[in-house]
Amino acid sequence: MAKSRRLSDNRVLVELIELGIEARKQKEKTFFDLAERFRSAGDPGEAKRLGDQLGRLVFGE
Image (cartoon, rainbow, N blue to C red; front, side, top):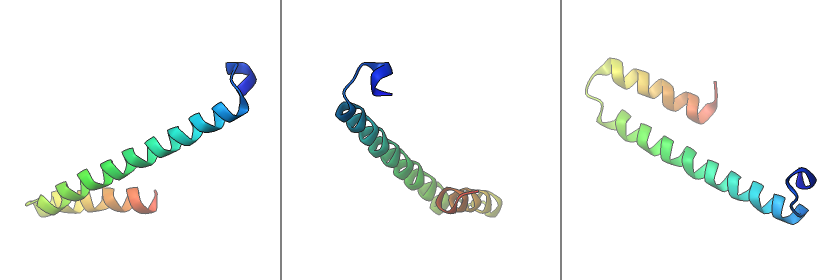
């Protein structure tokens, strides 16, 4: 990977770590946005759907 992108091994590792951190931040944002929508849902059907989505997000498919 480093050779094909003409980067040092260390630079590739730094980029992979940065991508991992960014992915985790995005997942956390998605979770909190979904949790807020779930909390404020007035319709029981919508609350169930959002609850199911939360469950899949936290525990996987």
